[in-house]
Amino acid sequence: MEILVSPDALVPLNEKYIWILGDIMRITDRYAVIGGWAVYHYLVGVLGRYLYSFDLDIIVGADVFGDVAELLESYGVVYRYTVGRDCVHVFMDGDDEKSAKTVVDVFTVCDDPVLPFDVGEVLEFDRRLVYSDLVRDYIYVVSPEKLLVAKMMAYSNRVNTIKIVKDLVDIISLILTQELDYKIIKGLVLYRIPVRVFIRNLYKEFVENYNFISQILYLDEKEVQVLKEFPSKVFDF
Image: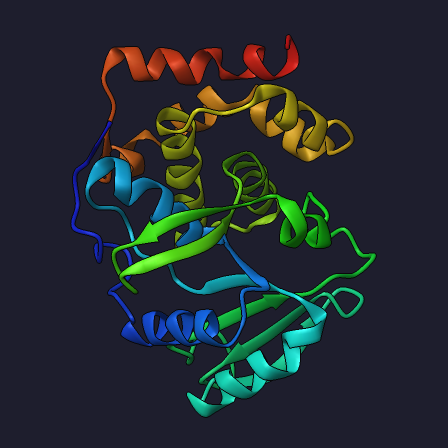
């Protein structure tokens, strides 16, 4: 797999995300990056470069949420609203996502299944240390299996925007570059019908969106075959 475009092809690098992430690391180790920036950090080490993300998604412990919120507000990224039952706290430097240049979604432990995994479990024992070329230090990110399923869940729920193209590119890139535990993936999608449907239709989604994907990724025949075989690896494990 080869990235055909510069990392800022879809969204320019917002250096505020680098500063925020670096400062969060300095005030606590009770965090894990998820979403597009987690994908970036897994793939840039393999490919040498990857796409930047529209926003920063991060899990934090409830005990440090207040400190993280205070830090964000010091950057002018202020609390706007909460999604789910006190689960996802959205901060931004504009009145809404259309006007904001910096959007940070802070996930905390709750009972609402916003994510396809237990947030507390991730913080306790299911996160990885990867090197960040942006903050020039090692950062915590969610495991690739949980990140992949979260991306699939986002894609299944998203309306047709530029973000849906980025989600599909992220999903394909993770499948082709990471050593995945298919038993874990199967368990995560067991009762998530929309995600299961997406997995079964993955190659079809790839073909239908090929004109967009081919502007960002180059896949050889062997890699295309991996996408075709991915559903059977998950469901026939």
